[in-house]
Image (cartoon, rainbow, N blue to C red; front, side, top):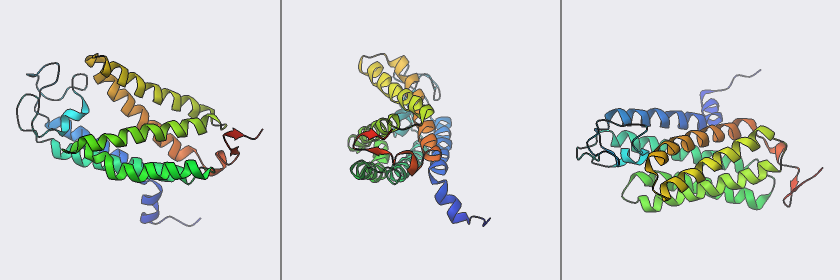
Length: 215
C-alpha cells in the first residue's frame, strides 16, 4: 500500500486539523481573558458557565480591562471558518443532486469568507455565516434523513435542536441557560461535522433523486 505524503494527509484531514487547532486557540484565549461577564461584571477570568464565547473577541473585557486573549480567539475563529468551509465544500462533492451540491459549495466558500468576521467590527456581516451554516446543516439533515445513515440521522436532529434551544433561551432572556447551551451546540456541531466528514460518502446519497430515495 502506497503511503500518503504529508500534503495528502493534511488535505485528507484538513477539517479535523482546523477544528482541533481552533479549539486549542479558543481555550488559550479563555486563559488570558481578564474577567467580567453579562451576569457579573466583576468576575475574574473566563467562566464556561458564565461567559459567552463572543466575550473573548472584545478588545476590552467586560470588567473594563484590556483583553490579551482576543488575538488567540480571532485566530481560533479563523481556523474554524476554514474548517467549516472545507467541510461544506467536501459535502457538496458527496451530494448527487446538483442544485443542493451547489448551495453547499456556496455555503462553504461563504463560511471561509465570513465566519471570522464575527470577531471583528464587521461582526454583523459575519453573522450571515451563522445563518448560512444553519441552512447548510438543515439541508444536510434533510438529505441524511432520506439516506440509510441512521445514527447520523439522530445526530443531525440533536445538533439542530441544540441550535434552536440556544436561540430560544437567548431570545427570551434566559442568559444563564443560554451561556451553557452555546457550549453544547458548539460541541454538538463540531462532532456532527466530523462525523459527516468521515462517515459519509457519495454512495450514501446517490440513491436520492428529486427528494426521494429509491427503495
